Length: 112
Image 1 (cartoon, one colour):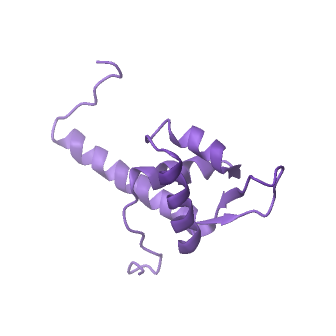
Image 2 (cartoon, helix red, strand yellow):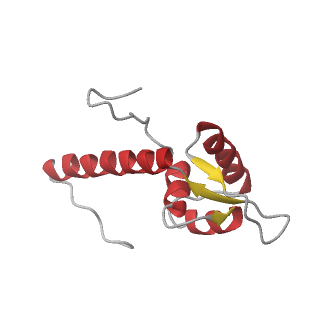
């Protein structure tokens, strides 16, 4: 699906998928490293991680790099479509924050 400007339109991402794509935004990583970083944003276990990775591979938002430093590790990278999906989700989040602020809601400080 495309917008009137011809750019692809991406559906909203789940918190786990957003966290995975965000973890890959600064470079390729193996599954365990993705999970460690993604857990900072969204709680997930191995089942959620590897199920999400399989779906992201099938949808073309990530790709395997083919690199391995251990036969048990598969490395993944963000594709151009994955980067676009991540940017689209960030824009949705930014728009939501603007609407929240317009309604007078202020973010709480961490631990408050």
